[in-house]
Image 1 (spheres, helix red, strand yellow):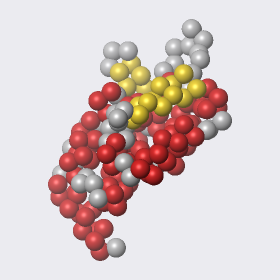
Image 2 (cartoon, rainbow, N blue to C red):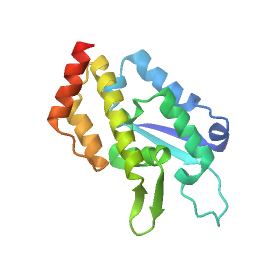
Image 3 (cartoon, helix red, strand yellow):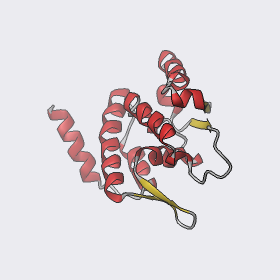
Length: 164
């Protein structure tokens, strides 16, 4: 079941997370959150002047809403539809970047590395709590963002988790 969430300018300007919260609450109550991997997409209806060349990820109000969303649901990348580009767009909302018509999104390399590693830690812990095998999923996510993570790193995370 694909979950499509529409965001309008009122929602974005008011930092209203209720469209997402409603869907997340449904998943939590039904116990189906683990089965909705890569099923979430956003439709962003944000009016702009025809002469406005900015991408949605360059509009401060839109980015701020996604920053708030990430603070509330730091494990959300698990639900995003990666194949439809939702992960890349989500990252663009949170990581400084430039957009080139020829080369697409060019993330700030240091900021992207910090973001990726933070998400690996967050998702690894969250997926462990949910009983979801994480290593191959996290490797796939990081590969989409241009990173190769060695198995030894996941072993280190696992050993640290068991000693805590």
